[in-house]
Length: 372
Image (cartoon, rainbow, N blue to C red; front, side):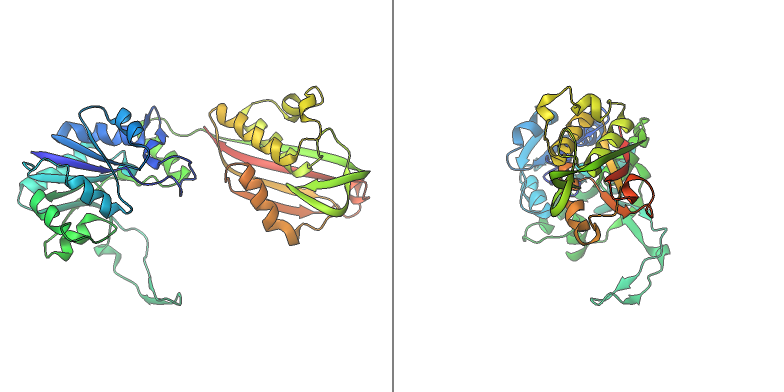
């Protein structure tokens, strides 16, 4: 009998998602569903470790034939918990990361074949093509390993059930189970891995993964501009921040030209209208609305249209205020409004030319990169 453990208790923090990573969709299925589908043809039992509080959702995806257990605080804790649910008649156990959801059935079968051939620990790996440096605590290079002997390790990793269970008999943590098995004195075999078994940790990884299922991400760009004249008696809001002591601008909302330009760039990239059609004077509910509110609403609109933001850039054009001292603060405000998207902010003047150069107003131009 062959069992498989799928570690799916990780958060989506590094991905920037508010849900566990295993529940993120890749094409028409979640990462977890892909992982189960690829392992199911070659194993007899599957045990999935779920994040606490998400057991019901994981069970709904996994189906009745899959055992779902609540994972632990670390990956090793989760595997240890899952091992207790593995059928004791199992000869071999595969340990797999839901984040490597596209690892193929053929790769899993290759691991199993090597176990049947006599190895007690088998892991797939890819040759290291980059030069790798070992550095000390101060950041100085200590040595340069020969990359010909290095491998980037993947999952599923396969083990004799008795060997893996013994390795986990003493609570300890490691980045993968092969470390624990090797520490117990067993030889670990490396077999050829595959490109499609990449670990999906960031949105760009997800875009790469889409190429393996014949549905590559569609990237689109957009440009947006905005300009407003200064108006006495108005508070200046710019790049999501209030600028005390500065003259504000006239406008239907708060007149935040940086936020407005970004909104229009996102609308242009996603073909979802423009600032006027979404928040213009025909929409009285947006009278006086803050730039942050409009950015948040824009994020909702482009998300519902099926797009995610890769990054945005905005250049503010005007003699004042001086942006540099508050650049980091402004980036944080806009990025937060856009769900954590990367943001760049630049500033320039027009050498005395035009309404911005003459000090009559302020403008901004923005670009956005999105993917569907």
